[in-house]
Image (cartoon, rainbow, N blue to C red):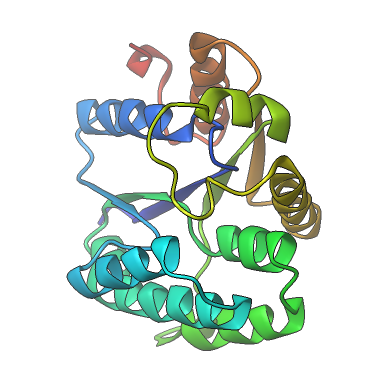
Length: 219
């Protein structure tokens, strides 16, 4: 049976990751892989309702974190774990690293509490014992906050996170850097301050080196 594959896409708002999620989905489908394309917060009817609250309603950092992890639990139970069990490729726009970056780095919420919630919500009791679900690969689209702000300017009506000042996104970026430093084995840093084609080539080459794509698959 084909093993499932869990790939997440991370980065501050404006880093341009969404374009490459769709491109990578097309490549995997062209290789004959079954695919689940999803996002966080969200991915289920319940989680999408919680997403709307998190992105738009004023609340403190703890409330944000609790709602995000509640959405994540439902997402894991209803979508991610079943898809992986079927041997599918799961491409997810953000996952737990975003919580550490935005609520931990951006909001300054306690990282130990976030780690506790991460282990509580992402734990799974399986045939091989207890483990905490993590992505097989996290593609981190790293971009300077001032450049991201220029890209976002006038693009759409911002949610409460997109409307934050550049200093907030500097802290978010530092949060991502800390996660990258702590778990470098599952991260690939993608320089997002390049042309779209160059960024895509970096994404493709990263997965090619892992053996998950083949050379002829690059469109």
